[in-house]
Figure 1 (cartoon, rainbow, N blue to C red):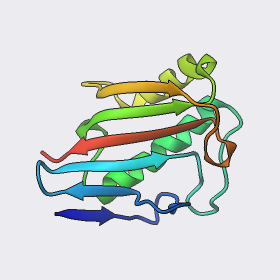
Figure 2 (figure 1 turned 180 degrees about the horizontal axis):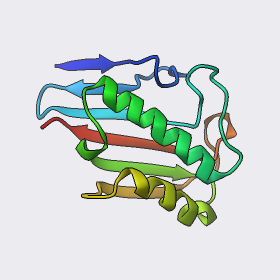
Figure 3 (figure 1 turned 60 degrees about the vertical axis):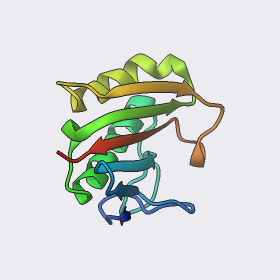
Length: 128
């Protein structure tokens, strides 16, 4: 059993994927990777990785909210950066959204991301 989660408060999918998928077994919600798009204009926001991370986190927050969840419900995050030199700047922004009980996390440097953005983040959350 799965439920597709979709909200207009986050950017629409730019490919064949859902913003998030909620599964009945275990009440996990798998959120697709978010990039720094303004959901109203569908344009990239930010010239630095930190600025782009801020928009990505807002987009994730909107998707989580649409699933009835929030950042405290995130159990795993995966960050994709086009340059690991931006790791510290991204950590500063990301850390503000997880002040307590941070989720497990992986950070991976990739050669290229959709629309040539600097960062993409996907999360997995759990209903309580």
